[in-house]
Length: 85
Image (cartoon, rainbow, N blue to C red; front, side):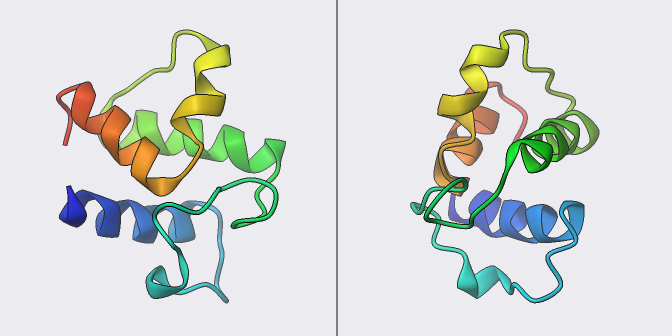
């Protein structure tokens, strides 16, 4: 799980062009939106693209996105639960 979290951090930085952010700067349990990494709704779309591109996962119910994208750890758990890690 830790390896997947570290991989995801790098993928998020690359996907969102967060040049000033390093993987070590991202707390895996911190919120991705709001006070944590400070992502917005456009970034959420990019995270959906990331899951499709790197893991072949499509989010069927948009309402699930809020729970899936709560933190890097919840994203990693979702990928693991889908058997795609």
